[in-house]
Image 1 (cartoon, rainbow, N blue to C red):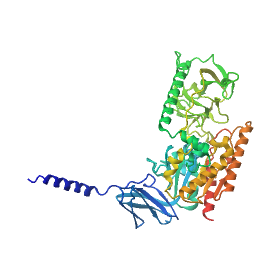
Image 2 (cartoon, rainbow, N blue to C red):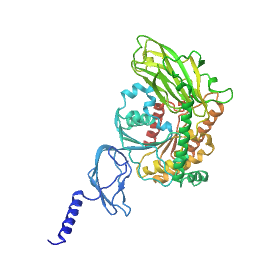
Image 3 (tube, rainbow, N blue to C red):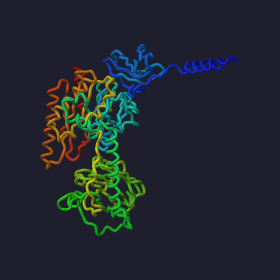
Length: 548
C-alpha cells in the first residue's frame, strides 16, 4: 500500500472534522446575550471577536448585516435606529440570541445608595413590592466588583440580563426598581438597566487615565498600584495582620472561654453593669473609645401565645459589627456597621416566660454604639405591628460587660477605590453598548474633598461622553440626601456645601439634571429607605426630557 495513503486519509479526516464543526465560533461580550435591551431610536452596536478575517453575519428583524473580523479578530456592526418593541431573536453566525427587547437603556452608577437592594427597603414598601413586582419588559444587569490599573478592559464575564420578576427583584437596586417601574408605566417602552456601582467608591475611581490628566495627584496615586506584585504583597500582609488581630480578640475575650460562655441561656449575669442601650459610657475609658468586644444581655418575657412561634429580631444598626444569640442559640451576625440587623428567631426557640438575648458587639477602630431611632424589637407574624401583630420592645435597660479591649484593628487598603481602577474594569467594557444616558448617585465618599468635586465630576461627565462618543449624553445627578445628627453642625454643613457643588455641576454643564433628594434623608442612616419617591423623581425628569 502506498505509504502516502495514510497521510492522505489523515488529511481527509481533518477536513471532515472542520466541515462538521464549521468555522471558528464567534464570541460575544456578556452584554450581547439573551434578554438584552437594545436602545431605540439610535444606531446600535453589536460586537465581538472571531478569527481574523472571518465573516460575521447578523440577522435581526428579517434584515441581514455582514462584516469581517479585523487582523486582531475584533468586529463590530452598527444596526440602524430601531423602534421600541420585542421580544425578538437575533442570529449571529451559529449563535441564536433570544428574548431581545428594544427600548431605553440606562447606565446607573455611583456608590452604595445606587446598589442598595430592594430587600433592604421591604420594611417600608412590603405591600407594594409583594403585589407589584412583575415587569418582564424591564431587564437588569448588575456588574460585579472589578478593578484594573493597567488598561481599559473589553468585557465583564459572568454577567447576564435578568427580567424584573418576583424571582429576581429582591436583588435589584431599589432605586432602579422604582425608577424603571414608574418609567415603564409612563411610556410602555421596555427598559434596560446596567447597574455598575460600588459601595463607598469615590468619583476619581470612575474616571479614565486620560480624563484624570488635569489631576496629577490622582494619576500619581494610581501609578503606585500598577504593580501587581505590590498589590498582592499588600493584600497578603494586611490579611495576616487582620487574622492576627481577630485571633487575639478571640483569645482575649473572656466571654468565649469561661466555663459557661457569656451567651449561654443559663449564664449568671447578676454582677454585670446595668446600662441603657444608647448610653455612651461603656464605649470609653473616660477619654478614649474602647475597641475590641463588648457584651450585652437582656431578659424579656414571652407570652404563652408567642412561645414557639417563629419571630423576627430587629436590632437597628450597630457600629461596627455583632454576633447575636437568643437563649444561647446563635441567630445571626453582620460584619460591618451599615446594614440593618434583621435576624430570624426560628420556631421553637422562644419559650413562655423569661428569655434572654445576648449581643457580642465588635468595635474595630471608631466609636462603638447602637444607632438611635432604629427598631430594637422582636416582631411576630409578618413583622407588621401596624396591622395588629404583636411585638416585644428591647429598648431600655440591658446589662453590660467588657469582653476584650483591643487596639484599633489594622486597616485594609481598598484598592478598588483607587483612581482609574473602576473605570477600566466596570465602565470601559460598556462603551460599545448604546445607551440613553447615565443616572449617577455618588458623593458621600467625596464630601471631605468637596472643594475639588465640581472639577472631578465635570471631568467624569466629559470623559464618559467622549468615550461613548456622545457629546450631549444626558446625566441625571442625584443630590445627596440629608444625613447626620442635628447636633453635628459641622458635618451637616459639609453635606449642605456638597449639595451646592452638585447643583453647580448641573448648572454649568449642558444636559446635566440635578434630582432633588436632600429632603428624603434620614439623619441616622446614610442609606435612606425612601427610594420610591426618588425613583419617581428620576423617572419624571427623564420622561420630561424625552418628550421635549
